[in-house]
Length: 434
Image (cartoon, rainbow, N blue to C red; front, side):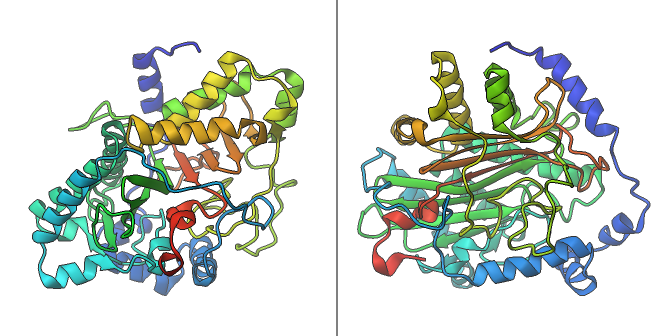
């Protein structure tokens, strides 16, 4: 795959998003600048502003109330895809860090933080900046030693590079808050953290944690030395930091480049089959009914199908089945490298390698889906979907930035484990299930 000039690419990305900085003198920003996260959320709920997002949150309420089933391709959960196994994670160190974190908390804060292993709150995450469900502990509201200890628990659970990716998303959120003068709404600590079950090294006592906030949501389930990190939502608007303390930070570019490289490696007939819509906003073909539970497109999720509260969505296979042509060694390598970037949160060497092996073993049941153009400068969406994984990548239009058309500087990515794999459901005993 050709390598890009990083300096030139970074400068271009900086110029692209800065051309769409909003007018901060408008009521949207002057009103929000006077509000804390709770006032901001209350204003949103009381005023139904913006209406499209308020309507979506009402649809989310219905979906949240459903019993958990899992993402499927046809409505039927396929059994036997996920089994207990030793993934070699350092569960002793993770549990030790969890216990150290709990030791810093008052009894009141412990009660806020801890939930039963089968609590519905596992599924309460969402990615907008509004604090729609103030569960657990919010990092910006606890003393710095406590916030640092929670981050240490997250770090102990993830791979080093995965932890850096999560930190980058949080720092970019902070940077966006500075760019639009809303640091009290969006900052590096505007995230909620929940703990489920009791930290344990035993396979008979599963537990886990959830982190969620603007553009970063990670669910982590442990059963002894086995870990499930799914679902995850990682996004960024913009997807670089071009000034200040963390200048040079960028995320989600590798996923974009690998996906585009694979699409460009296909023959014209394969590209035509993979590309289910030629433009990102093909309103004639992506008609909406107004039912935000079932519609294919909405202004928040845009082309994503597996976002917040879509735990039970039926996502039919679309586009190009990989079984329809022989993958070249280079193409197979690109797809596995792409999957690895999406799975970067998983610890190495064993856990991530086993997960990649699962994905590789189902390549003949995998479909590649593309929306939009596939020139070097085009924004796009793609999905890699099989019985054991759903990976979604989408370039978005502006939420805080003003670009009405999707831009390559606003990125959303989602990882789902279909067929009841999310939240470790397939590994849970009957009394532990969601």
